[in-house]
Amino acid sequence: MALHVLTGAGSGIGAALATRLRDRGDDLVLIARSAERARELEERHPGSVAVVADLAVPGALAAAMSQAAADERMPDRIDALIHAAGVVDLGPVGELPVSSWEWQLNVNLTGPAELTRLLLPALRAVKGQVLFVNSGAGLRASPEWSAYAASKHGLKALADSLRQEEAAHGVRVSSVFPGRTATPMQERVHEQEGAAYDPGAFIDPESVVTAMLTVLDVPRDAQIPELMIRPRV
Image 1 (cartoon, one colour):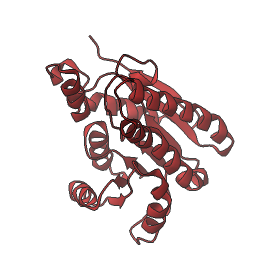
Image 2 (tube, rainbow, N blue to C red; image 1 turned 120 degrees about the horizontal axis):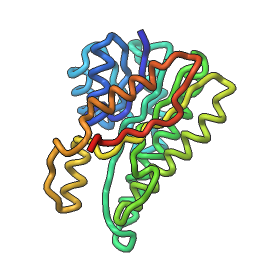
Image 3 (cartoon, helix red, strand yellow; image 1 turned 45 degrees about the vertical axis):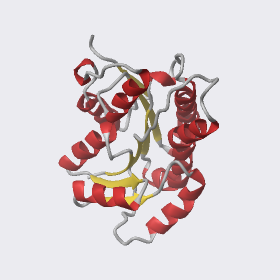
């Protein structure tokens, strides 16, 4: 039975992954942005522990995780840290306000970097792994996607550097790059793009989760550094 720390368990890919992990008997520590969301997650996943820590405020994560460590329900080991949280706000560079840049960079990049830093000692102790849910936008940028793509390009750089730094400690680091997936985020993107949304036209989140579980479960003599997932059509 493994213990996973997971962000983004409230919806989309993260929610589907949390369910699959619990269904197979794994333990979960779920990072929640508010006390209300934490209660919701613990009710949805009985036996899990939800920690209130807002990725949008990276500077407060250390205090939040320190406070969580005092919770007697917190496990004494971490096998995997999985970054599935993400936000998106589209707009041309000439119009996108600095608040939008800060929000996306904090949640998608700086927050994950800080949370990883805080949990690395525990991951090193068990030769665990870190899994980043990136995006096709982490490999290329399109008009009006500048801030989101910048955050995801940065997330790839974070993973690539971390993988080399932590190899000596036995910590595996992987990135998955899903194409457009049928999630609430995708619905929001379509609203911003002014396009009709048909979830059947995109990857099912369960398909992405199946690929992620393969990355997590590959035997210890191997690792999957990067995995791209694209719609069949």
